[in-house]
Image (cartoon, rainbow, N blue to C red; front, side):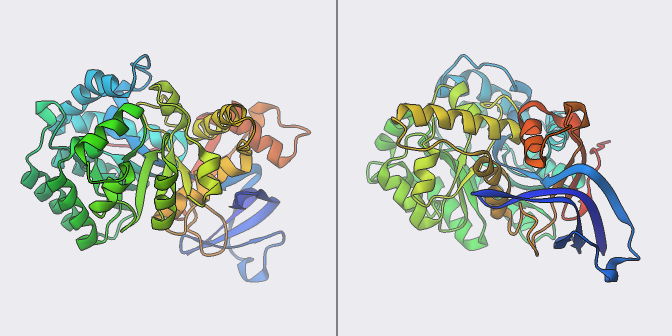
Length: 424
């Protein structure tokens, strides 16, 4: 099936610069970009063009770290550090998802908000509850959005309502892997130990074994907080550093791996992330909301580590990855100042690349309009932002900084137009 869109086409093939095609045609065949043309080739002359003239067409946003069950807490408890925040707000809310009725009430609101924000793919933490995790995966599939969804694993250092028995935790995880791994869907499972302090060595080993057995990715948290790092040293004394603890259990690049935050990663940890191809998920809003600090993104990038963006709700206060782009640039400027300008701050093209092609690469050929890439896209109408006499890139920057979801007129995933999800 062939679709043709016309508009101002903008994307980042590399972090260094934007590609801009003013009022060009983009041809999509079987859900993938075929090419971009200033004049439509004759072979497509009989196909109707979807006309977005003067609107801006960009890749969809990719959120590589967020917590779906924390959606109700969005914008709350921003006056606490990480560990008190978890115990006072997060764990009590997540305990409610033992009830699938609660999940059926809350998760549709989360998925709709993700759609509204312009996120077309995401990697998501659910809870320890198997049936509620299934509910979330099925909602993503019904909505037409791409996702990795993880049943969270915790068998120590958490409240009793969330405390799992090791064998049952692994059994429930494997059940989901068997059910969804080979399903023809853009919604897939991902192994999700919450973090080292919530998992015994036996559980971590079992989860790593499942990664290898089913060839599935993993996601967790890394070096977010100084107290957390010291705690890991006590719990895993044989490991050289936090990331090495994951490595011992095949959870650090042996299959594709996402590690959120990395605010205090040592040089050794950064080198291991590079060697093992671990993707860092930068969550700037969450880092300053829970008082963790500033991730040294430029240092990570200079050392060859792939970096993407995450909303990390509800540590983060917004599901918008456009907000994450802005925050990433802003905190990079603080890092730039505090490093005596040793590490350059992020450019708009670099932050946009993190949100699109870098993040999208975790899902395959996603996040760009190069030939062969799956066509995930947003159509932006910025006429209410008084765009006269601005270049296309100036208009895009103004939308990112001062626009909102009302400017997103259409969303595409794999070439399919995705309307607002309606859940009965």
